[in-house]
Amino acid sequence: MADSLPHSGLHAAFLQHRAQLLRFIAARGGGTDAEDVLQEVWLRISAAQTGPVGNPLSYLHRTANTVLIDRYRARRQATLRDRAWSETQGGSDPAVSDAPSAERIVLARDLARAVEALLARLHPPRVAAVFRRHRIDGVPQRQIAGEFGISLSTVEADLRIAYRALADLREQFDAV
Amino acid sequence: MQPDDQLKEDEALAWAVRTLDPAFADWDDFTRWLEASPAHGAAYDRIASAAVEAGEVAAPLVAANDAEDTLPVRRVNRRWFAGGLAACAAGLLTFGYWQQTAPDLHSRQTEPGQVLAISLDDGSRIDLAGDSRIELDRRNPRFARLERGRALFTVRHDDTDPFRVEAGGHELLDVGTVFDVRDDAAGFVVAVQEGAVLFDPDAAAVRLDAGDRLAIAPGSDTLTVSEVTPADIGTWRDGRLTFAGATLLEVAADLARASGHVFTVAPGAPRGSLTGSILIDAVRRDPARAGALLGVPIRRVGDSWMIGAP
Image (cartoon, rainbow over all chains, first blue to last red; front, side, top):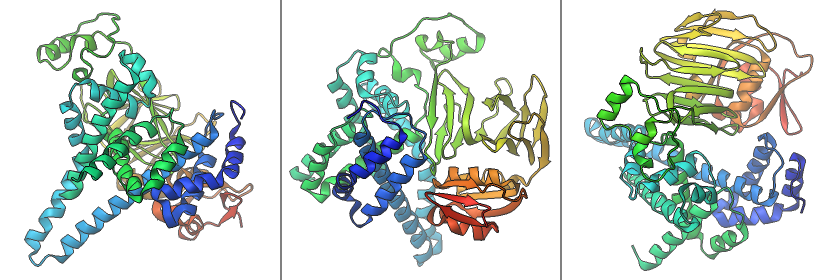
């Protein structure tokens, strides 16, 4: 494979590896929507202003993975909205049944604050610094290891601590 | 939690860390792990989505207390000022953070169809529309440069330290404010929903109050200030596009940015202006319907949608 391919090369790679992408999407839980997800991947690579891509197959998998994460988040938001709505509408005592959904709305607004508070609590403090550098600045893990003077496996271990805590936090928000 | 579930969680966690790294390339192995059980994908989604979401809502600035002892401290231009001494005395900032006065810029960007909410350390908020890019300064939360696209700024006002936005080669200084900025192929626009903004304070120095909209057409240097309904400004953040006397070029740019579909203006389309309002979700689902709702023909041409084509 060439080191880099022009934008149209990404489309060629898409067509060439279509079956493999479809298999990935299906395994990932795309199920009956797999063709829709694939279509969205095509739209995204068409819309994105990317330069030459070094590893088109990896790039396409990453795009598909992002689409699936976005879909998961949209589904979860919709479920929460529906639940808030039915609770507001369905309660026998309006004064009481309103309370949980109102509370949930406030909590959703507070997610950013809760994330900040959680990051501040993580030990050692390097965990939060590594998380920000990776997820916010988009710096690859190997480069972070160099910047912080730690090993790549330490960077991975730090991120596992942060991701686990953040997943648990998200669950608490959903459960309220 | 059962031991099996715990194992599954640990594996999902390890895969989330590895796959969300831009350098990850081992997608075949990941696919095989996913195929071993449908529960794997579900566990992965739960963790990966929380990590991605937290990265979007967390403050982009590295707080000094997070970086203590671990980040290399660059010693440049040691400068002290009164406010700084007070902050140091209050223990809000570490010694190292303070000595750094050079900007430490980083960019955030969005894909078409995406909206990104960015919370700044000073309590201000920026909503970045789709297909847009913004540059922020880790050392100065009161600065942002819109590199392309559109953003809605909800700025916490501070008389002694005004928020400064650069966009399209212009400068905007807040006077206590919610304002929308756009810089794209359809031109430069700033519209103020609340408070006021000073446009190019060192040159034209135009003051824009709530409901004022300043526009510069592409390739022109003429400023046009008009009045708009403040409530119609920044509605895109809540999932609705509102047009008041917009050109087709502006409509195409906004529809593309918000929906993720590609929109173009038909060559020789009438130069008229368009007024109307449309839900972004509706455009996303069915781009052709946008035409009916806005009263302008939209036709599919290959992978894109052409506006104004009869």
